[in-house]
Each structure stands twice: as C-alpha cells, then as structure tokens.
Image (cartoon, rainbow, N blue to C red; front, side, top):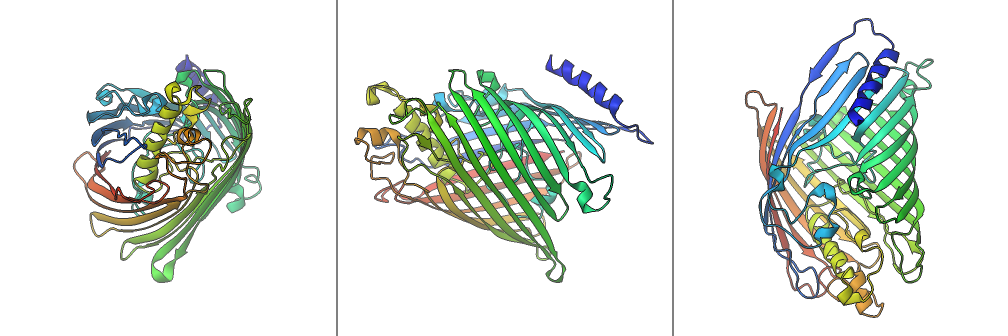
Length: 502
C-alpha cells in the first residue's frame, strides 16, 4: 500500500513539474559493505560485579541505495540486505530494553537473515520549489536530535577529522515536506538560496519511538535554512505528539539552531571549519512518573555542541576539538525532567558513551524493573538506557588526523564530566534516596578520560570505488562517577574495520 501511494505521488509530481528543455532519465546504484569486529574488556555493571559476558562481536552491513532521476523528480531508495551480528559473544544484559532497530542482543547470528527496506521517497527540486514525500532519513545540523545515519561524504572523509565508531541505523520518518525559495525570483545571488518550509512526519523509527512496536509519533515542523557553500545556517521548530504502545504519552516542542562556516585560508593552504548546534526542548510526559509526581513530569532540556577544525592540503593534516553539553537532572523524583540525550549517531569518543554508560544504564533499567528489588516497579525504567548516546554530560574531544598517501592515521582524546552527579535509580532507592551510582557508591561527576588511535589503508580494485581496511583502538580510564576507588583500571577496546564502496 505504501509503495502504491508513493508511485501515484511520483506520477503526480512528475506531471506537475515544469518540463525541462532536455528531460533526462538517469539511474545509479551505489552501495557499500562494512564488516566490524570489536573486542572489549570486562567491567562491572553494578555492585555485584555483573558483567555482559561479551568480549568479541562481529557485525556487518550490506546496504544499497539506488536513485532514479526523471528531470526534476528523483526517486531515492535504500535497502539493508544484510545487517547485524554474525559471530561472537551475545549479551543478555537489559535485552528487553534494547531498541528494535539494533536487533535482538540475545540472537547470535541474526545478521545473516535480516533484510530491511529502509527508504523510499520522492524529491521534486526546482529553483523555486522543493517537495519531499515518502519514507526517508531525518537529519538536521550536527545531528544532536535528528540523525539520518548516513556516513560523511567522501570529500569530507578525505579532509576533516576521522570519527571513531560507526553510524548504523539513523532516524526514519514518513514525511511530506513543502519548501520554497522566496527570494529566488528576485535574487540570483546567495540570498536566492534561502529555503523556507514546513513538514509533517509520522515517525517510523528513532530513539523515542518505533512504528513496528505500535508506538504512534507525529511531528509538525517549520524550518528556515541557508545552504551556502561557505556558510550554512538554519533553525527548525518541531512539535511532537507521541502515544506509546502501553498508552504513555510524550508531548514536546523544540527549537534547534545550527550553523557552519568554512573559511578558505589560501596563504597557508588550508581551511578552517566552525560548526555548532543548540537545542532547547520543553514539554510533558507520563512515561516518567516519579514518587513526587505520579501523574507525569514537565520537560525542560538543553543540549549543545560546537566543533572547530583546521585542515591543511599539504601536509594532509586535520586537527580540531569538539566541546558539548547535555543537561542532567539533579532530582529525578520531582515533577520536572531535565536530562537531555543526544541522538546516538552523534558519536563522541569511543568507549565511555558507546559502551560503558550504554551497558551500565541497560543494567540499571534491568535492576529498576526487578520487583524483587524494589517491590513495586516504577514507571520509566525503559527510559533509563542511553542507547550509547551522550546524556547528562560535559565533554572536550580533541583530535588529529594525518593522511600520508593511501594511509589515514588518527589520534584523539576525550575528557567528560556529568552535568549532574551520575546516579543509578535502583541503587539510590535502596540507599533511602541518597544519591548513589551503579556500584552503590556516592554519586560523583567525573566520568573519566579516553585516549584512542586509528590506522587505515585505502586502495582501489576493479569495479569498486574504494576498499579500506584498518583498526581503531582506545583505552578508557574511569573517574569517580564510574569507579569510586579507581581500583579497576582502564577499559580497552579494539575495532577492526573493513569497508567496501561502489
């Protein structure tokens, strides 16, 4: 039914589009395959020394994303033919709280059988008008709230800092967008590119909802964006209404501002790129019903990130630093919720957010939902896991990347603090309301620090655009918020990577 409606809409858009002087039909089928083999040390997830049992994991993804162009109308498709774990250890910790789009962590080899049609959408693009309709990835700015899961373009990958980790899933919405360039008829310069528009969404999957799990989430958004070559800036306001499968509701309104400035520095043979994004979110929800507010809570959350990078063409070196903030909640038992969570695809560091806090909060949700521990299971246990995203944090994330010939070599570091003392709800409840972390120790702020490095080698083979093989590795040294007595030492992680692109 969805594809039939999309086809009818495509015919209507093609019929309404102005006929170009030389209509063209163009077909392309790019795609890519990635293989990841990760190994990580054990670390305690609670005071009892619970461990995931997962040391080595192999995952892969085969994705194809063809496009068909018919004059000003383009049909975009995306299909994951294979995606998920294919060998290694499984992890049963917090399995009931893992999002559907990440697969079942107890299913060892689901990556050999998964086939997921992800995107099918039409785009009409003229000088004055832009229309999008269908199921597509949702992304904005640096991706603090909405990330489409797409990798950086080959041009960006060859110029700027190497990211650590991967984007796997991305947010998907069923969207209708209508936008216009109001100054295009009068201005042929930069002002003519200003885009103003509105959209309506039904969320297919993101970090808050899954249509496949019978969560119903709808959004209305308005935006203004200037997509210049050197300066890009925009603002989007989003109103969201969501009803979960269990009847819980979420109503939010957010204002998201972003900007990027790329400045050529011809005298030194380089470029300077500055970018930032800030998000303010207000609303209400009964997904959280603490003892002090059994009817639900009001939301007031703030997050921002800023990044500066310098790239030289000779030598091919890029260096830079990202700083960011996600608000925390000093009193989770009152009638207000302040903890802001980045989109999981905005990657910060390598181990702390992606692994340590993700697994600690999964275990925390599991303990909080255990009636033998707390007597009555409180509402909101499913909201505790971070899904590997930044939450309740300040961080500084510097790095450098050097590309001598076919090699790419990178070094980076991360230092992070909790915006509010990092506490575990179950351990805090057991301590009579005194703030405690997941190991039953007094809640503190310093998460710790990471050092990480990477080496990759790229080459071209017949019928492939690029082949890259390499390794990313890092060590996380926990601070007092994670390890009160600092007795456990560092947590090490290694990630082997193979990427094919055609």
